[in-house]
Amino acid sequence: MERNVEKSWNDELFDPTPIWKRRRYFVVFMAFLGLFNVYALRSNLNVAIVSMTDNRTIEHPDNTTTYEQYFNWNSKEKGYALSSFYYGYLCTQIIGGVIAQKTGGSILFGCGIGVTAIMTLLTPLAANLSLYALIGVRVIEGLFEGVTYSALYEMWSKWAPPFERSRMVVAAFTGNYIGLVISMPVSGILAASVGWEWIFYVFGIIGCVWTVLWLIFIRRSPARDPFITAGERIYIEQSLNRQSMDKEVKIPWKAIFNSSAVWAIIAAQFSEGWGFFTLQTQLPQFLKDALNFDIAKSGIISALPYLCMAVMCQIAGYLSDWVRIKGYWTTGQTRRYFNSMAFLTQMACMLLAAFFLHPVSSVTFITIGVAMASFAYASFSVNYLDIAPQFAGVLMGLCNSFATVAGIISPILTGYIVTDADAEQWKIIFYIAAGIYVFGCVIYWIWAQGEIQPWAVQESIEFEDASEMPKIQNGISNPALDVKK
Image (cartoon, rainbow, N blue to C red; front, side, top):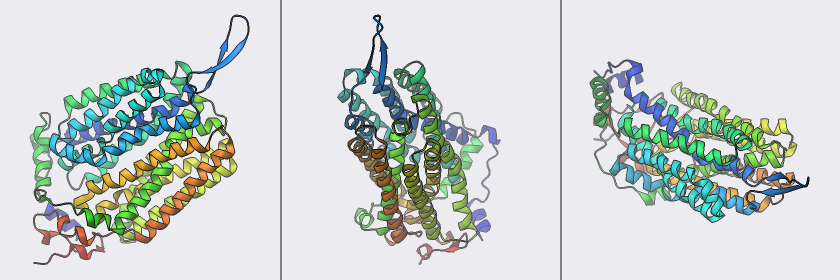
């Protein structure tokens, strides 16, 4: 049935453009590089701050040796510096979607990263002025990066044909983790060889170069792109015109906040955000304090978990679709099983990494835990498309706001707990993360849903003729798709 329905939706739609000349794939490639910059610019301070606050050996002419720091910040002050990015990031999550609809996703996406890159170039100057100046720069970076994901989703609504969206979005979003994989070891090498300032100079320049190329070559829609072939433009526009998106729908805020399915996603995204941001911001410092790695090695090893995650994301996404297409699990079962498998494994890895505190075993468990997060992202992060596709952008901004709160609290709490680089204090951080994973697992298991919710039923019919929507899709029945005439 699925094959016949798909044929009816795409009747006579064909893209004659050779694959290597298809403009939409170039947009995906540039978006991949953009998201590479998003995470590289966001995470560079995580490695740099280790070198910025480390003791330096000073040899004097009289054969005496002294030790000093670039910046004498205590653990609490470092926690505020690391979390300050998310103060601004939190404020523009939902606003970004509104601005993108009015100005276009391409301009907003490019300018968001471009301003962040410029502020990154100013980071060494701000740090030398004062801690407060550094925090101010990071807040501004967060404000502008906060609009990037909403802007990119607005672009996908214009560029991604319905039956290519998953692969296009996943391919572009892999740039997030490749950005971490490359930026963290490179930052460690730069800090050890030429100085921590060059971490910000190198990635700031890369971000500025990408911004110029993006603004020159990328447009918000195929209709505005002077480089696209007529055949590809017609193919994209006709495939998207099959969907009726011109009806303005009032967002049911009360129903959203009263929905247990929404709160299940919020709990899961907050829990995963806590663990993710704890490791993203603190892993280099943990490797140095508890496992005695130097700055160069800690940067390289910090990237290893995210390399594994980038690979596992492709596998988890494929498996998530495969088990539903085959009819082995319903959508709700798939989301629950994948999320529980991820969270329980991450909980166990956090406890084991804290218990052993051995360079090989701890790094191994952390790597496994981060890689398993890919199964959680194949669960809750797409679940808002299951329960309310018409409001998926709003739900994404809302849920990501809660995850951002975790990114703010976690580094600050770490600063209060880890006060003297003691390994036992680091164990507490891992125990807290493990407990939060259990919390998210339980709440999501109880409340998660895989079907369109009653408050989103009428608004979620995207097809010109709702009767064309199959009552059974991929072997899965959803009563919310029944159309009454």
